[in-house]
Length: 363
Image 1 (cartoon, rainbow, N blue to C red):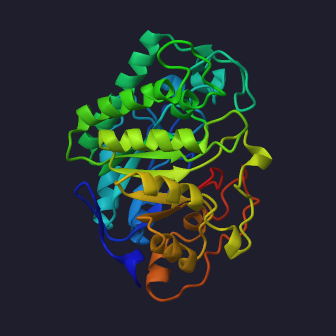
Image 2 (cartoon, helix red, strand yellow):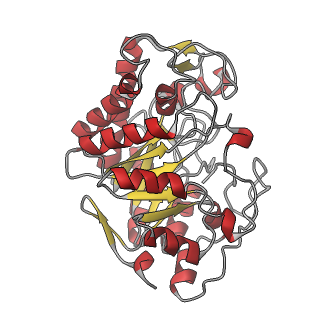
């Protein structure tokens, strides 16, 4: 079935195909962030369905970096047994699993964070539920260490890769965006300064896991928001990451405040609406040498194949795999029917089918 179902390697991690399950909040962990058997079974099912790489739901690296109930945490050593059971289940099903590391910054509230939220600047913007406290430099250094510690745990627990979440308005994206980063020190101002926190996190993570372990990133190609991260600054950041040795970039776009300025749709009813971040991903791919994936609205085998024909290295999707975890097997078998999840007005409602996860996070 062409290049989509050929094996692909990212820094020694061999994937059986170029279909990637993009991160989705499942809400299947204990209140403290401990994975449950239900989450482990969910990932096992995805692996059995044939997807090349599973990227976990966003996993907080520090307690105050949690956004939603049921989110997974890797901020402590307490969950080692459950984490190893999770990675073993995926591997026994023939899959690979990458953990997505996040701190949500100002995009949480005091109830979920357990304290007043932290952000690059103490400002109230549309995407913040409440006004956060500005991070002191000592706190920035602590968070860099938290990302590195989370990555070290992930490698020890058997995860095949880590992905830094630098999209959708979370903390790293907040540093990159001039809308949410109003600092006047070395972390604010021009893009060279605004990407400082991200590069410090990447370097610390790389040191923690070594050169032979895949470190990837989910990066907004544009915030699609007036005053937010521009496509030009996103390209600068992508090139800086590539120069540092990032192993792969998943290109997304938008924040909760993007609204009508964002191409993200709640309905993907036509082929023309699919792959709405594809143009941004192509721009990034033209500037870097590492693998680049596109995420956003893919529902058809033909559109996924077209993305690869245009030079991308993989296609990431999520909502279709909620409905059909065995979609990769179906497409590979020759059944090219569009994914069943062709429209999505289900956000923030309970699971769509018995035992299913909540379809809530943009893919």
